[in-house]
Image 1 (tube, rainbow, N blue to C red):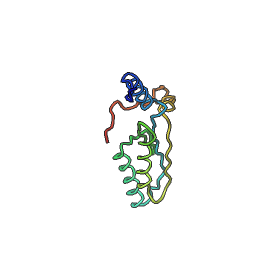
Image 2 (image 1 turned 30 degrees about the vertical axis):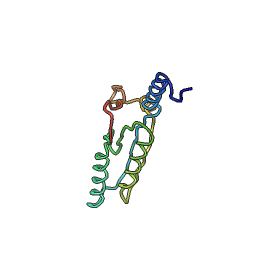
Image 3 (image 1 turned 60 degrees about the vertical axis):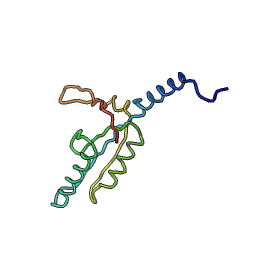
Image 4 (image 1 turned 120 degrees about the horizontal axis):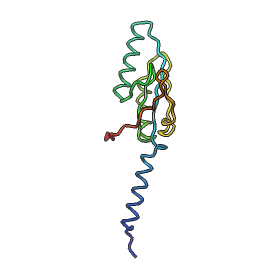
Length: 128
């Protein structure tokens, strides 16, 4: 009896695993919401450094003080959360929330009176 698996069953399993990997239920949108003081020069500098660090991490501005980033899975999102923990300013409030791709798709967005669809998942894969 051969100990090697059937190539067809391996191929089917691999496809199934790949489909689960990119499922809307496994993908994660990480939101960073913050309210930071900007009264003094040092506070404004801390705000700017935090915002620029978010941009370097690949977050995009969704609204004032609300930034969002797509991650293929929980593990990748956890990397971003750890990075944010390192750059949180001394004062102010920072909140991080994660929603699945499917939950994100259900978002209702209005631009004035016009209803729009939420942002779509990026098409390009990350290799780092």
